[in-house]
Every structure is written in structure tokens, then in C-alpha cells.
Image (cartoon, rainbow, N blue to C red):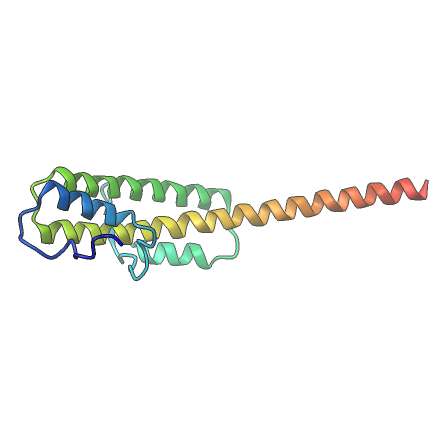
Length: 149
């Protein structure tokens, strides 16, 4: 069983091992469980109402190509922000409390990325099934026409 010691407990000064453990926690298998998508974040030079954007995107039944591109662009920007946080944890002059705060923020952003990308994947699966249904219909019609002739 992995080390059960909470990485956020201990002296304020971080060792290399502590930093590595905190970063690995960001990418643990169920990283997003219990994490809340932040209401507002700054991406680039803009303040973004992230929670509402993600919620509006995931509750919609279908998305236009432009909406999907925008969601993927936002997901990439969030990925960049997460990598920035990881670099700060690994190499920055941060305390244990600050590193753990960055870890939690990164995990909440990863949840937003996961929601945006998994919804886009569902759209792709629906389109694939619709296309395959049309292909099957066309095959049935061709078989029917062969029988009629």
C-alpha cells in the first residue's frame, strides 16, 4: 500500500520527495473525486466564469463544431495552467501549505478539463453511432434492392 502519510502534513519546508509526492497526487487515478470546479479563474488576461461555462456545456444535448473547438481551446488553456502550477510546486519557492493549495486548485481544474473533454468524446460517439446506423440502413436497402431485382 502506498505511503498513507498525508503530504499536506509536516514542516512548512518541502523536500524534493515531498514536492514529487504532491505533484503525483495531482495525477492520481481518482484525482477529481470530491473536487469542485472553481467558479471564476483567470485564463490569460481574462476572468472566466469556469463553473458556469462547464455546466452549460455538459448539460447541452449537442454541440456545434465551434462550441467543441472552444471547449477544446479552454481545456488546453487549463492544461497549460495546471502545468504552470506543477512547475511552481516542483521548482518554486513555496511552502507546504501553498503547494497543497496549488495541488487542490490543479485537481479542480483537471476536473473541468475532464468534463469538457469527456462531453466532446460523447458527442463523437453519438455521431459515430448515427453514421454507422446510416451505413447499416444503406446496406439493408442495397440487400433489399438485390432481392427485388
